[in-house]
Structures are given as C-alpha cells and as structure tokens.
Image (tube, rainbow, N blue to C red; front, side):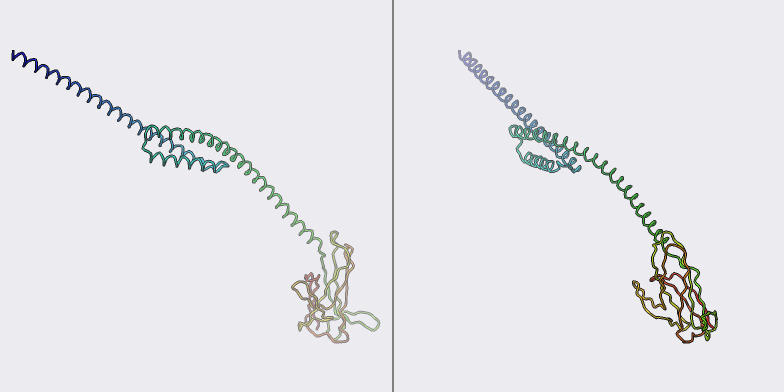
Length: 296
C-alpha cells in the first residue's frame, strides 16, 4: 500500500514538472518569437529611414543640379532645397519609429512632387534660354556684320571727303621771280644786279579745278633776303599755332579756270642787297609754292 501511494505521488510530481516544463517552453518560444519580431521591425524601420534619407539626398542633388541653370525659378528651387535639407536634419535626429517615419514619408512625397514640377518648369525655361541665347548670338553676329559694314562706309566716306577736300585745293604752279629795273618811260628791264634792281616781280599760275570753290582767293607772298629779313610790308598773320610774317598779299578772283598772276615788291628807292633771296607763297598757313633767285 505504501509503495502504491509513493508511486502515485511520484507520478503527480512528474506530471506537474512536465506541465511546468511545457509552460516554460511555451513562454520561451513566445519570448523568442516576440524578440525576433521586434528585431525584424527595428531592422525594417532602420532600413526605411536609410532609404528615406537616400531618397532625400537624391532630391537635394537634383535641386543643386537644376540651380546651375540659373533660370527664373531659381529662387523657388533654393527654397525647396532648404526644405529638403531641413527634413534630412530632422530625420537624422529622429528615433525612427514607424509613426514618425510615416510622417516623414508624407513630407518627402510632397517635396518630391514639388521637385518634379519645378524641375520640369526649370527644364522648359532652360530650353527657352538656350533658344534666346542662340537668337541673341545670331543678332550679335548680324549687328557686328552691320557695324563692320557701317564702319567701312564711314571710312570710305571719310576717305572720299579727304579726296574731295584734297582735290578741291587749288594748285599753285610755275612760280617765277625777276629783279626789275624800271625806266622813266615805264619800260621794265630784267636785271641780275642788285645795284640796278628797284622792283621784284613775282608771277605764278593757279591751275583749273572744276570742284574747287570759286571766288576770291587770298595768297600771302613772303620774300626773304640773304640776311633772313622779310622784305615789304612785314605784317604778321596767325593761322592756328602758326604765325606768318609776309611781304604782301595778292587777292585773286577765281572762277575754276586757270589763271596767271603777277605782283611787284617795290624797293621804295632803297637798293636791294646782294645775295640769295627766298620767295614763298602761302595759302593761309600752308606753303603752296617756293623758289629762289640771286642778285649779284
């Protein structure tokens, strides 16, 4: 009897221990399963956070590339890029739980939608700018060619004006001088002796010129003796920076035809000195003809 009771108690203890073991195993299994589930969820959350950060980095880089085009929407691109930068900073500091990730994902979706819209608008503006640049460059080239043409015309007109001005100048030629002895009868005798000369005759011709301006032309005749003295009136006229002391002037009526001119320098009763004489003819300040003669 005692052995039977002992066996029954032992069996009861074994059953209880078996039940406890089974309960422990069940609890351990549940804990293990829950831990794995939690680990899977944490890994998934971390992966979602990393993916979201990578996606935000792509959006940020897209904005930075678009900003290089410098279009009319550049200010909006900068503003949206700053929103992305701020969201990246907030996401990195977050704990990364599922609830906050859903919030960040929603913000990302909104930013990505705005990015696609702005980038498309930026591309369109970029194409328009490229078209305008091509048109502007073509216009610049055309204007440059027109300017070259105009500059050429200006140079041609200036050259033509200079040619006309040069062509319209009167040519003084065939300058001749004679020392004269005038007799009481009025007859003039050419002489080379200073002691006999009482006048110097100066003659020159003006060539015909159809494009020159007609009218009275004034010439300044300068006669200088061997001692560098200006003979005659010794009057001085200023032309710009030049001062001219001359012997006398000769006003010639000019009508575009060739004309021969003569004028006299009177010795006024004084003897002419021996030596070389220099005769210059000026049209205002410009020397137009010159010659020399000698009295013995």
